[in-house]
Image 1 (cartoon, rainbow, N blue to C red):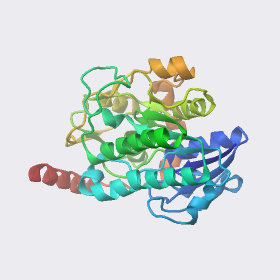
Image 2: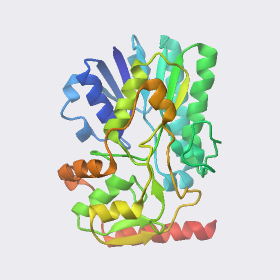
Image 3: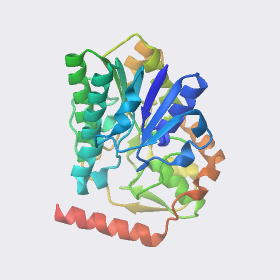
Amino acid sequence: MKIIVTGGAGFIGSHLVERLLKDNHKVIVLDNLSNGNLNNIKHFKKKIVFKKCDLSKKGNWTNSFKDVDIIFHLAALADIVPSITNPDKYFQSNVTSTLNILMAMKKYNIKKIIYSASSSCYGIPKKYPTLESSKVDPKYPYALTKWLAEEMIIHWSNIYNFEYISLRLFNVYGPRSRTSGTYGAVFGVFMAQKINKLPFTIVGDGSQTRDFTFVSDVVNAMIAALKTNYKNKIYNVGSGKSISINKIVKILGGNKIYIPKRPGEPNCTFADIKKIKKELNWQPKININKGINIMLNNIVYWKNAPKWTPEKIKISTKNWFKFLNEK
């Protein structure tokens, strides 16, 4: 098949592209490299068509949709705090871009999209593990924009007769994970700090638990979504287990410091994955200990990560206290 992957130079996207190439698909990657990195795709870039483009703006990138069979839509801005300070930027990236993608799908009569949604749409759930039918209650702009994009995909599919599968991802980790931002992806930040022999920055008191899902398991879920005959479905993608941040740090080993907890952040994320197990015949294969070992064995990747300093951490924490006081 001929497949477009938006955000294909990013953490999850690059792993997905690698798998699609292994399965002999033709792949087009659309990425503005705001979160993505060419280093993620350098070892297979010659095998794909890569276009650097801004999906939030109209442009000739839409010509890439001609004769395409399916879209994997992963491109998005992530992180909570930046979305609070720049909600307009997140709306353009996560909502307007999705609208432009849907318009291109309509123009070229593409019949299926697989969307990388976010479990953050659940806000602070009342029940764990959390079902797909749980109340949607996004607590910050990032969560809202990811959910609005999902709603738009569902709405357009009903009107313009195409299929969708939306995968609500829980805390994904693995090689190539982002390292940016004090409040960035947990494992990417921890690995960058470990290799630079700096203390781990723990949000809150570290007792909060998270459903960490290894990136290869997420990619397997995406491939299952590609192959399935089920259509117009929403699935949680998680490990089906929850582990505390303090325990993660204990496994990694090292010193730690604490930074303020973010508003609207749940004390627990814990996916109910019965639906995806039953309908897509998918289940996670990498437990947390094995996943961490894989990351430690690939620690060379983080040698080029941003150099963290106590001064940077202190400044970031100070700004966050300022935000809380303004609230």
